[in-house]
Length: 249
Image (cartoon, one colour):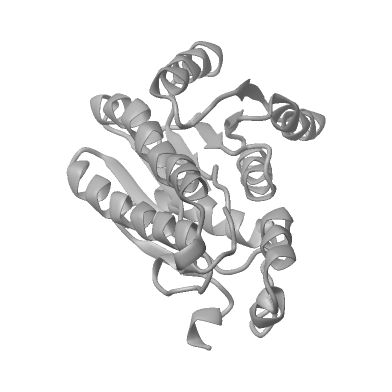
């Protein structure tokens, strides 16, 4: 699944994480060049090595998504090396603390909002004007089913994912009619490091998630690939839930 007018170039923030890696590998399998942005250059390089081992093309860059100048420079580097960016996936994110709201650490809340919300905002600011000027492009923001429900003890994470969904809707309206689309994917619990971190800090988190089974990162990557592709050309501003039915429980 690709954008019309290929070849396509995708930027994946958090490209060294579980979901970022799966998404990048899916894009590469579809013939899309992938730029991996991650605060850990080593993690991004590990994903790139897998892409190249399978015959794909890409680039690994260290990037702090909370800094506008870093993102702007990264996009310039990507376009010089790979070509015009046609896909952005905002996958970078952190879970923060698991703590009742009355004692939730303020500095942790600020950090979660900076990475999960400001990072999405700044990445879209860096890329959307270019996409709009060219008349094509697709942005997929990784939110969560926490964007449409509450989860006790996760004030920072839940608030941030509600905000990501709000930013997605605003951006979708802002780009309307330009040939650019902005959507959000809302995964349920995904097997990997983040859910393991939450489980270590709480009681029963994964057990509740298992009522609908944990998704694999590849399950979510498939949904992201669809939203990014021309097959979803009439999808804009959507909140695409991929949770195995967990929000029904």
